[in-house]
Image (cartoon, rainbow, N blue to C red):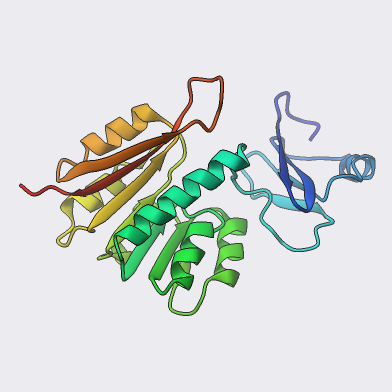
Length: 233
């Protein structure tokens, strides 16, 4: 992009190789030259300012959503994922809602175990990818959790894994005011401050377990899984 003084770039690495996401600008006159100079990249995306992400070069062997959000520490992310899965399965749900479901790893595994899953994800590539893999009886909704959650309740388990800004205030309001509260809410947060704020917005629930994961060693950042159930009072 040649008309923006500030750009952001992200490298995403998978078994297929490295992909690159460029964010910013409104025009990119040298796309071809850039792609030719970066033959080692399996995919290049450009997300224009105030525009939808575009796949510029695609050398992938399968359409894994490499441009969508992913954790930068795969080893710690695998431990966190297994912990969330174990917590969700321990609640023996029949129906589960996975909010901010990403590419659907947890949602798909729960659905394959026989749970009816509603996965909510705003990112187009991630939601399309997970929809193709979701078994019959479960489904993926592309949209915002605050807009879609009410229509997918009641549910036995609600998973939440929002961005660093935390939950839109509508999400705690839906859970707090639900006529039939979920038996368990499992909230994964990368920001202790917004986690504390959001939990305080749900006085009708109590925390039964918390576990932190050192996703970003040698920094102050930590990933926390908080499990909540409806208060007995």
